[in-house]
Image 1 (cartoon, rainbow, N blue to C red):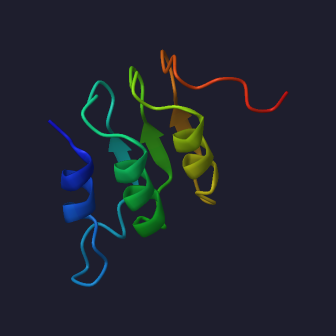
Image 2: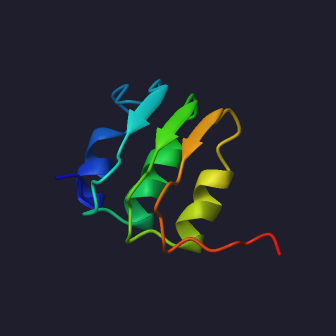
Amino acid sequence: RVTDAALAAVVPSSSGGLSRLHTIDLSSSSSFGAAGLSALTTTCTDLAGLDLSNETQLGDAAAAKVARVRGLRRLSLSRCKGITDMFQ
């Protein structure tokens, strides 16, 4: 189970943490929300691949945080029903 607290605990850059993480698959880990995703996307500046498939708890605020990851090349939001079409 991946929670907001777990994501915040494993990504601190002060000790190296996972700041150089390139790809992470969090599909079907529905125990975290925007706060954990924010910690991940803020700290892991080299993130190139992110799978959030089946994350029913995530909404538009979380999608906006993901959109700020500059080097992201692969993103899966399949079946993320809380995310709407923000670009209308």
